[in-house]
Image 1: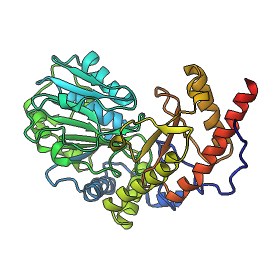
Image 2: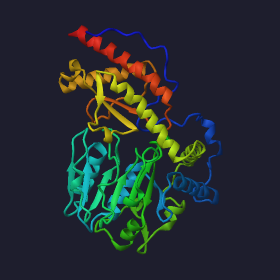
Image 3: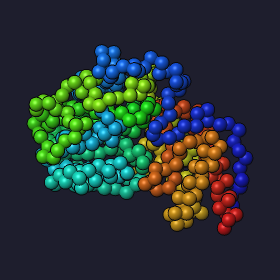
Image 4: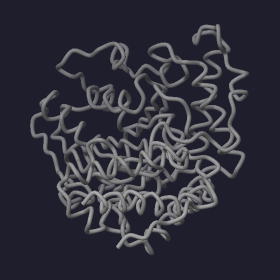
Amino acid sequence: MTTTLAKPAMRPARPEFSSGPCAKRPGWSLATLQGAVVGRSHRSKIGKARLKEAIDRTRELLEIPADYLIGIVPASDTGAVEMALWSLLGPRPVQVLAWESFSKDWVTDVVNQLKIPGAEAINAPYGKLPDLTKVRPDADLVFAWNGTTSGVRVPNADFISADREGVVICDATSAVFAQALDWAKLDVVTFSWQKVLGSEAAHGMLVLSPKAVERLESYTPSWPMPKIFRMTKKGKVNLEIFEGATINTPSMLAVEDYVDALKWAASIGGLPTLLARADANAKALAEWVAKTAWVDYLAEAPETRSNTAVCLKIVDPRVAGLPEDAQADFAKKLTSLLEKEGVALDAGAYRDAPPGLRIWCGGTVETADLEALTPWLDWAFNTVAADLLQAA
């Protein structure tokens, strides 16, 4: 029997728990953007300098090897991944690891659009990782380090051979700045500004290893290449892209916001502190899940559970036993109630994922806000469940 709970006394100071765009850094305000290079060409000396500053601060904060190239590209993380897929794939068989929505999109690109000979999708359902023992060192590899829509991440890069012949393309958009990437195992790393650092959307980052550059300079795809995908000139990588000369026009307001986020991250202790903040946030939520009967992780194995996009399923038998559309309706009512109360905004599961909750725990979120949120989650569940029983 469901007992109606009283509304909790404490509220999260910041109720933004969206998994993208994510919460702004603590203390952020519009005044942050006052120094933005607006009304000027992004190709002016000051415009290129600010873009280069964003690249240099990214390298320093993420501890990216000095011989890796870093570029700012259009269309967010999606654009960065597409540039890599269309520019690098083709000369070898390709394996794509897919266990959530976005990695399934990369399967569509590789198998159905590019139609790479020997392309293979290694799939897993929501909540699980694919069989990583099937990864071949002779093939190119495409995968997401952290499944934003499933809450399932790879625990490390041990499944990637150090002596691999193929290139490794890693979509790291909800992992970077929160999880330790093994740069030596990754040839292409992509991410967006609006995820873990909570900056503004529409811009992507593309990081290339020397091996990826070698592939770009030694292989020409057989298909036509749109302008925004072209990274070479006369057979050589276009270094200007990786020095602040973007392929298309960026928003200098968004650039300023990203630079501000990078400065904030450096000021609090850099990458170790960002990782620790995400871990502390995920731990606060884990402690609540451990003592709460109605909810559980979508990710089955503890070592694969994300510390950023934490995906939760409703396991109370009164809800879990309902038809799927009724479960989705329950989850929608739950998240709508949380939003109505102003305690958790955009906390619903991704539209293609199993119904439930998705709560962002990246480093821009304060642990105290997550601790204040969990009683509200219990209150909202009990309230919606009481209505369900009454209707029955």
